Image (cartoon, rainbow, N blue to C red):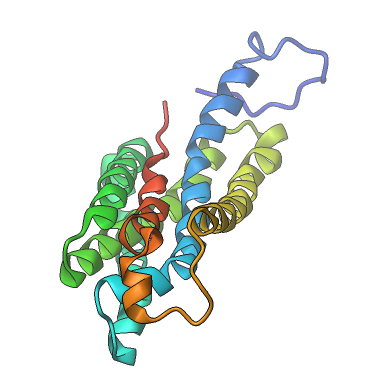
Length: 212
């Protein structure tokens, strides 16, 4: 059990009841859930031009559902995270979230139809809902009292890093094969970004959170 007794800064952290390096390491790994939350939140906005042409989405309902379907998964994941983590533990649920991130990221990029694309977007959203609740909760529970604030703030930091990473990936993949001005839907769909690049942006989130 991790001690929460205040100790002098120069004290031996291992002898005091916890290994500071180990606690920081598992907290940083758990905070990767925040990174994927930030990445998934933003990356879709840089790929919409291409997957809309790829799947021939024309109605506003289809376009809106493609983006917002992940929010349904987020809602489901957030609603069940508390009860399931009480029953099975935070660590097991974070591992489940990691598996959902890994599988849904690759499956979303490889989706052959719009229905399959949406299905895996919902699954990925469920992983976001689980991780967004469980990552800070897990960190708070393993962190000693004197470092709890700093450790829990790692999750917020990784969210911002995930947002920045998504913007960079969108820019980098989009710049590899720039489209001509006033490109038609057919040109967009036939381009490298329309065929492969957008899927790569989504599949890059296969880096997943876990915990020790």
